[in-house]
Image 1 (cartoon, helix red, strand yellow):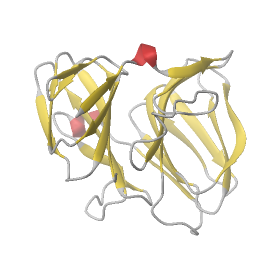
Image 2 (cartoon, one colour):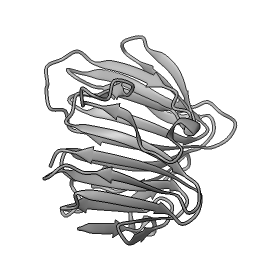
Image 3 (spheres, rainbow, N blue to C red):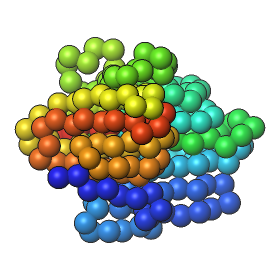
Image 4 (cartoon, one colour):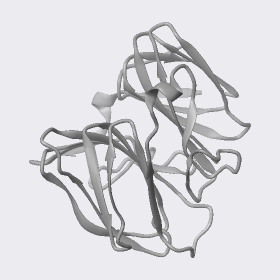
Length: 233
């Protein structure tokens, strides 16, 4: 089963500094049919205006992955961490027992991100933050883990969840396959480009909620950049 969720039908809001679209219920957008997808709780598509951003605020008991699509995001938190994550790269914050953080676009151009929240499979641990570059050439024609709670994904940023976040870049006409374990769920979004997954066409920034599919075959109908979450049901 693959349910296409067109970008133009997503919930969201537009502020002076933020244009945001929500694949799942979040903030002022509530849809009881879109509360989560297994352990995946939030997938926000954010465009942040230059010299603005999210002021310091708290989180606990959530794994928060930020995938930067354009521009860069600057992170600061109550642990003293500070870092700038550029387009194509990823940062992870394990909120654990509690953390305050801010995320600002200190660039001269808009920054676009996917913000992905995944429910942790263990609690009571100290908060943590990390970031890592993932060159797009390294994921050309294949999925690579970007953030993962799986012990075999040693090169990925660690998260405390039964889930992994993967990325791939594809040239027009290229195909890639991904085996989805029995009983697991996947959510896939093309950051750019048009793709087809198991016969379902997706435009850039559309979502695909996937279950009861053991093998995903993804074909790029034009040059594409894709993000996939594989999560426990």
